[in-house]
Image (tube, rainbow, N blue to C red; front, side):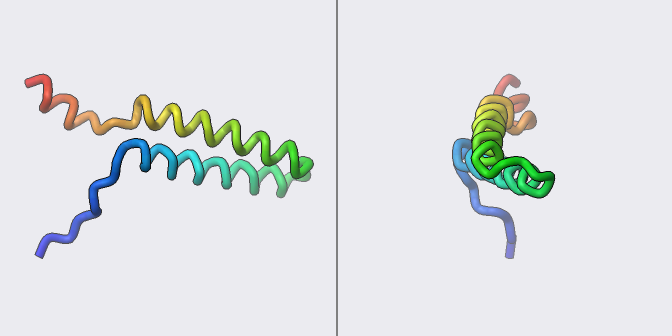
Length: 69
């Protein structure tokens, strides 16, 4: 029996990473005393940036190397 994680689309993984970091930044900003609206905006911006970075550069490099050979 082989136990492995189910395959997920790259966009789904990027969205989950973005959501995770947005939540983390939002909580951190609230913890240090930033206003709620500013914390929400900051979290949303960081989440969008992480989504884009993971979506564009988060591909597995081993798959890319095999495809070139």
